[in-house]
Amino acid sequence: MIEFHFVRWKNFLSTGNVFTEVDLHLHDTTLITGENGAGKSTILDALCFGLYGKPFRKVKKNQLINSVNNGGTVVEVEFMINGNDYKIVRGIKPNGHIRILIIYTFHAAFYTCSARGYRGLVRYRCVFYYVCITER
Image 1: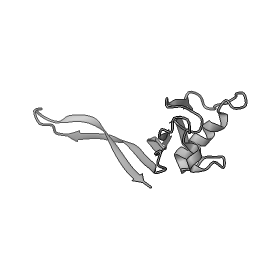
Image 2: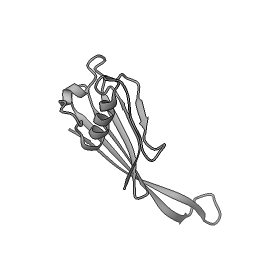
Image 3: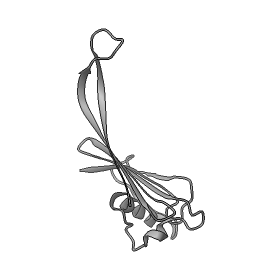
Image 4: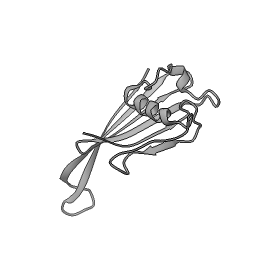
């Protein structure tokens, strides 16, 4: 089962150059309400763009970039599947190139490792990252 932690974006559609973040991890369910034009659909568009590379609504790629400040669009989605954390950072540069960064955090069991300068063995919790960066 997927457990979403948050979705965060900047320069996405009509939002500005400061990150807007929606925390989806506070409760078991999340209800989003607001006036027309408040950004409810933008949350869904950001989540879909972060996960799949395209918004929920029929919006062209060049329309996703904020046209006022013309900065690069960035969308981040963090979630957990079967106890493993994932973070996807997807962006569009002003020239239209898409950049994807996927971070997979794997919390392993305790490993016994030796460290220089210490006598004996040191035990610590290892965290592994798998990073994939592509640009189109």
